[in-house]
Image (cartoon, rainbow, N blue to C red; front, side):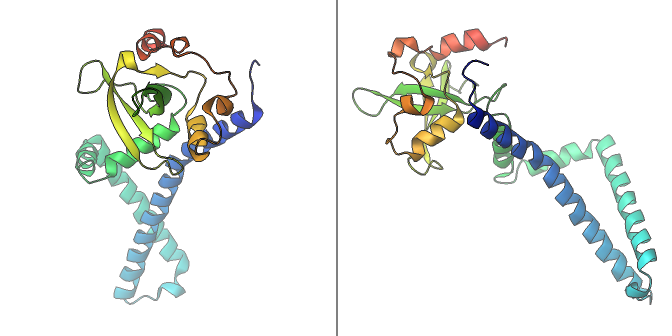
Length: 220
């Protein structure tokens, strides 16, 4: 395979596995938490009616399991009546809930698809030159023909600046990935971006503008 990089392929696949496993892990933790609460409630009922749970462990287990399955059944009924949709709408009003959900989706699909993260170049802070940033989505901004570009800080990339930039002033580094940009930030410029992506320096007009990139990938 042309330009196949085993380490990058391994890292990419491992990250996809991590974030692919995350929803399953959350589901299992939620199920165990719910079962623990039901189990505790059944134990309380045993004690209230005069039974000692330690002397009736099998019966305790059956009641807890039965109660848990019954709870899941009622949750299924709620889903059928769309009440869960109202609950989801309520949860989105909580500060940070939607952000966390969107972040998980970003990392889970950062390499491809609608939420693919693009490494881009825009006009920099200086009078001349450009900055390398990220586009976490290719959705148009509230300003027509403008798109959101994030410039991260170095060496700690969890802060930065967001800009609304006209699509003709955004240029895509197609061979670069989210991981390449992270490596570049952590190096504090000790490694040039050309070194990071193992590519020769190229003139700006050799990079496709976002307009051209969108036209090429719109139906992909």
